[in-house]
Amino acid sequence: MIALIVLAIVLGGYFYMRFRMDRLVLDTQIWHINSETQAAELTKPNGYTLSEDDAGVFPIHATELAQKFDDFAMAQPSTTRLSGDVETGKITYVQRTKLMRYPDVITVRFREIDADNSTFTMFSRSVVGHSDLGVNQKRALQWLNSFAQVAR
Image (cartoon, rainbow, N blue to C red; front, side):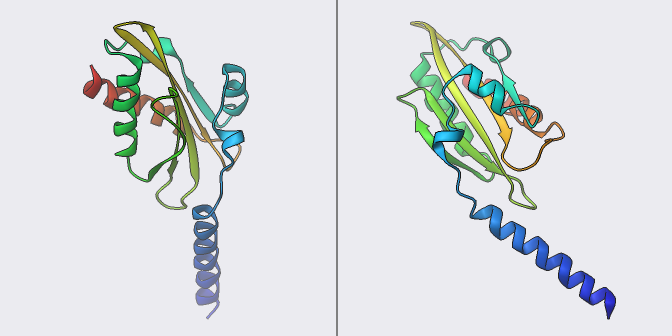
């Protein structure tokens, strides 16, 4: 009997938290970041910054790079667009974890190097919790590696 009560409490807590995380509203004024300084503040200690040097150079115009990246990101599991668009060169996505539906926010900023080349930065961070256990770095590097195969 006690085991059933404990199981009911655990399952109730799980579904309550999952329900709350699915309905968590993210303020674009906070999460759709505008500067490197803001990114540095928002990605520590539960996030990761992928620099332009890490991303490398893509031999396409920044608008085309942004469109290809947006198509790529929107095809990732449990990912939605929070704010921004291809035309502005800055897009913020939300990707939720499988089990608890915790939101992680990923902002990508695209920059034209010259008429034929462009690059981007990516800021991936957790909304909930103090430490991300390396999840955001892993995601950023996985997205970069997978995207680079498609875009280059």
